[in-house]
Image (cartoon, rainbow, N blue to C red; front, side, top):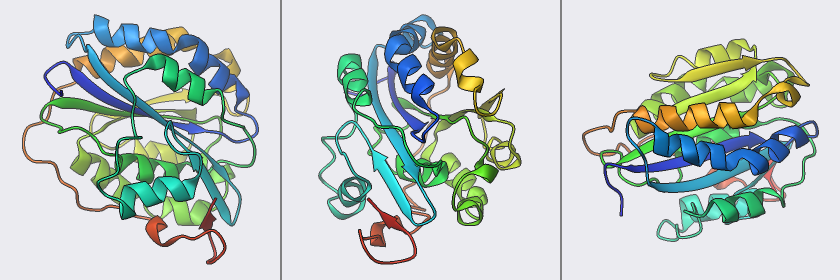
Length: 247
């Protein structure tokens, strides 16, 4: 049950072709994140984890989570089966890393679709649970796919981050789009080198520091604000129709 020492964390992970170092580093060092949560000021003991791994091209968007293997399944269970949320989040780090090991890296980066979906995950109440999204990529938004569509919603994404009371951590190369996104209240932006920057990261140190930061964050009072769901209109996507479709 959610309480003062609870946290829900979603890792939004670029699963494009160059991202193998990220998934290797996450699997080996997730325990450092969990340890950091227990070491910080808030000493989190009750943690739920999920990830949203994503890639795509100019017409397609693929996403997978702990509980779902396709974008269409994620969309269905977020927006069409509103009471079917039991396969989002796990309290088992081993389940998290095992499922992360099944992700195949390919294609291009399409991260803001994934961020929008992650913000709509079935979080526990913000007044009882620290909420965090860790967004990691080795590519600026400007060099990925569908840039104009994705960038057009950044102001709305910032408003949605505030509405959901989520603390956003960005690990990415220098990018004007990510600079703008990092203007969300309480956000952290760790700038890395483009392309091979992830291979130089000490994942244990990075994840432990993030864990401590999450545990030290302040619980939010007031009722949850569920406005602004599905900013990119993904709940209407199907597998074969439209200019962009989920797979």
